[in-house]
Length: 117
Image 1 (cartoon, rainbow, N blue to C red):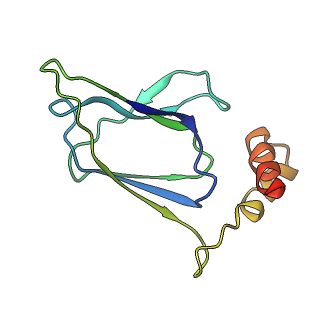
Image 2: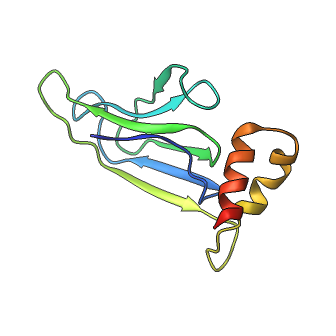
Image 3: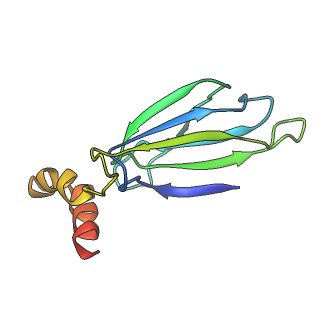
């Protein structure tokens, strides 16, 4: 159970609120990739019920839910994606333009993807 390595290019900021307890209801869960572009070690965030984490759209992250020693494997989260538009319009092409021009490969990829739509 999981969601592979990705970015949230459709949101300026993402909020993840845990509705489950780490270690008793699930293991693993939300992770961040410590190397730009993926491939560098995963760091799992041990979120308990009510814990929250905010991250920007460029963060490479994913979900890999694993069973506890008791066999529990239930992870619930409340995810909120924030945009800088009253109409919830996607301005991703604007968000990534400056860092793409500066040569950031992740920004270049995300900017090109947004322009292609």
